[in-house]
Length: 638
Image (cartoon, rainbow, N blue to C red; front, side, top):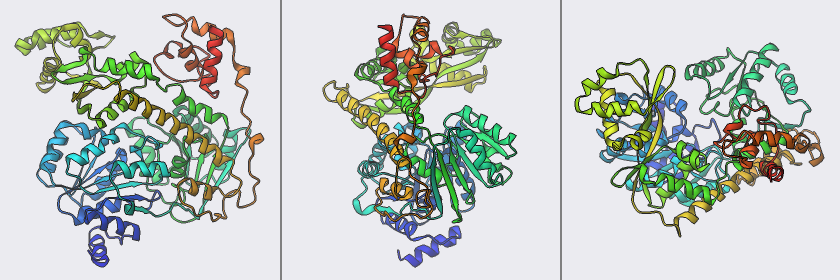
């Protein structure tokens, strides 16, 4: 298609003229060529796949982890495209209607959450649909080296194979060379399919400070212009609430935003910020994805970021209108130890990986025939491994042809303690005995009985399908109000895992992920200690060789660079108390547990640190390196 005709078609449908990079990506997609578009936040990545949907026969499938962005874009596009979304927020009937439209060829564009890729109803509908192309938003999530790795993204190559290899349009705002290579290899994107617009932001002044009191310095920066639209990023949810309160007390219209807030509250905060009613949002990194506010003047990080690419994506939300904007990192070297502990304190070893696999494949989890079903949280607790790591192991086994993911099922249901159990039993007829056995094995609280499907299978002897059928009858026939919770991951076992081939590959993947986290944290520190130009440093890290000084960062405008002595790291050993270690160890139910104690001191949440959660020493050494603390604890406990 000629550029002029393409531009006319896009302008007629969307009212905008596509820029050069957008035109290239659209043209390649409609020519059935796969591409990777690396484009900064706010540069219009979405138009690339929306434009392709206008010009192609069939449905363009968009895989995106950003639920709020999906909802916003679908609402905005309803008058422009035949569009829908599939995510966990939809009721069963709503999702069914979308699947019927997909199978019937009624959709030009469909947004799906990555976890939907394992859903069998979705796969059945896809099998009847004509998928013109697959767009992968936040494509860096597929890479173990990426700062936002998600195990569900590992299913994408399998999806593409099942669809007959349609063209892929992968999109991300930032991708270092290692991540770029992973994306292109996994999604079969040829070398000439890379479209990189460059990440240079000439209007964005980057700066790093190492203040003695970061919170006081934050109040100072924001207070200098209290009405300027500002995003403040903090590490933990509690930090956002405290800092927003301090800013509000100082006269700044500020509010916190984090994943622990109710969805309605988050939406209200976002709307108030977008509308100008709030001058400042203090948030975890959950905020900002897809937020379209071009006039953000400042982005301030009160804690160090987990990665340099994530940091540049976050600060890129400032100054998208082209006017001068500022990004300040208030740095403390202890942050990197605290961030590293999230990974170092939970990195599984070979024994833990083997235990997790043995538990997941255990006969008790055999649902029927060749299908297994298990709760990653329960398996993780038993094997001392993070539930996300369990899911990642199985995503990698799926890539190796060991298992195939099936639609997950709910594992737990809650029913009011005062419900009429006998009436339900009577109405279920021959299924009444199953219901009674299920209730008898439930955990009774003050107001609720919690029914566990996995526990009921082991306790009652009834198979998974029988228990699920009875629960479904109770729900669908309205016999008793059930609240579903917890998830069972289900897999079809295609072959037995090979200890000689599969296990080493899994362990290598675990090690790769750990090394990736370490390298990302080291990259943040190198950025802090940069002596030339901060923006040029980030561009080089992202694989863009343009070393031209930006002229606006702190270093370019004459601030002296930071050096090692200016980054004091507190001596954690001054706060290490052997008596406290022994007191914590005494709380263990099965004797002293050095790993659990070290995790508790470093504020690493896990099954083994849970017994110490209420002890005053919890998190006392959160800014100390976990492995050093573990060695010291082992020495005390012998």
